[in-house]
Amino acid sequence: MLHRSGATQVFEILNGDTMVTAVDLIGTVPLFESLGAPLQERIEAISEVVTARPDEVLSQQGTMPEHLYVLLDGQVALTSTAADGTTAVVEVLHPIDHFVLASVLTRLPYLMTARAVTRCRLLTIHGNSLLELVEREAPLANALLRSVSRDFRTMVRQVRDLKLRTAAQRLGCYLLARVKDGKAEKADFRLPFDKGLLAARLGCRQENLSRAFASLRAYGVETHGSRVILHDIPRLKALAVPDTMSDPEAL
Image 1 (cartoon, rainbow, N blue to C red):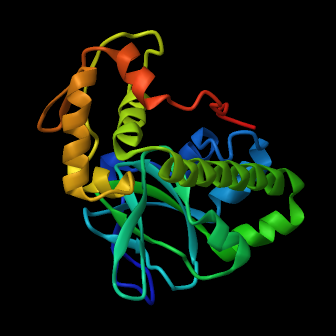
Image 2 (cartoon, rainbow, N blue to C red; image 1 turned 45 degrees about the vertical axis):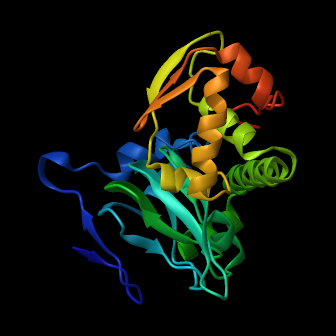
């Protein structure tokens, strides 16, 4: 068992037949894939593969950063809590994604709490050691700068959606984003997490999400529990008006 000092969470190092080393993974992580092999090896030396159980706290809002996390398997929810105890879901992460990079780079407390939604496999990278590499390695600094810039653009999109779109439009955009085939006129898929978490992710209450789903029936959206069927994607697009300024995977 791997215990993080000063926190309540507990991780398990993968072992036996399921052992996957950091050496095998660094080159597949989008954040580091552009780096040369020697620099990737130096990052590997300060990294560790761990697992977390569902509902495990990975990082706690208000505490100082110790690690950069890369999500390899599972789902992680990022939440923020106000002074009155009100909590909101800021984002739900899927593989392969990283989190708390800004806190690590600035050496400032976490602004959000990261909690495992499902059993997760993660790569943890020691924060102070990573900063030492950043100070000496321009390619790494550039890679992290690009990543922070993409994160900022994502945040701007979310704020813009909250201000400019209705709950039904935000839900429509979310459902359309789950469709892999850009030319499809119909789709059938399952939501990756429960509707309570989805409501929080979209910035509305669960009852508002239910009303949004109900209003989308007229646009060909059918639901059965976590299953979603889109019968008329063009009509749903006309309502939701998804963002056409999509970003490439890498800047």
